[in-house]
Figure 1 (cartoon, rainbow, N blue to C red):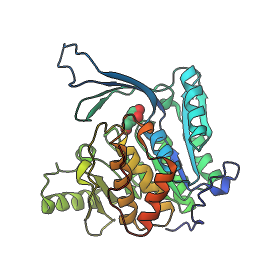
Figure 2: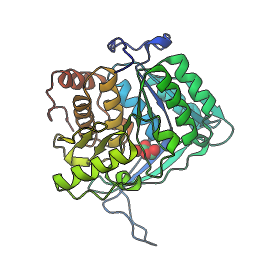
Figure 3: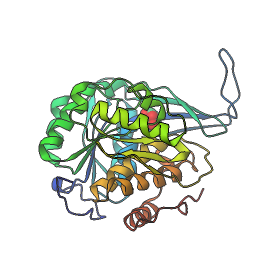
Length: 335
Ligand code: RIB
């Protein structure tokens, strides 16, 4: 990468700004997760089996997953001045994520009601609240001060703030990773400062790609077409099938995901993005970093919840060691 950094030390030092490996600009939410054997049809009420309240938000999830690898992670975001806001900031600190650049605004913090069915599939509504108030100037200033190796963004905060953060990252020579989730149009100014674009299959279509068919030759053509049209490196997550990687103007390659018996896929895409960012910051080549993403995501779906489903630090460290050795398989998932 163009911004040479020391290898992640494994000992995050929140007091040392120069030690930041991954900076995530993005959302924080409190997740309200209902589990039911099947989800209701229009106008129907069903009995659920379980309810869990936990910490979520795509940005916070990616930051927490990254921190599980023992690298130095910082978050830029905004919470409300309510009790959830205090809990969210405390949680980030407890998870080893530097939260000095998570501001507090008058009003509500983000919340996300989530439904999960027996197959582990989810439906999510986000109510962004204070996430709408992340400011571009503050975002750019945080990047300039913390000088991260990799900057990660998503779509649950204003794109203007991510543009400012990625612009500052580009000036530093840091790598930028955009997860266009929830799916929607990408502002041209954001594309212009994005190195890696990491959509899932649904988002791939929403950002202009052709529907992925499951046929390798057709998918490779669709991915190359969109990568060229957007002039970015593309990494498309394919759920249980793994991921497809296409460096800017390069060839498409495939990364298989370890097999896993999914009980809750909530936050699996965020686990992928957080782990991929760590892989890049650790100096892995993009294919190995994507393989680390697949391992972390597959591991997460065997446990319930969002951040609570992510690998413990000891396991994540083993995943990173295995990824460095080019050895990624399914032995991490322990249910
Ligand atoms: O990607 C999963 C996340 O999406 C949840 O944690 C929820 O908060 C929403 O942001």
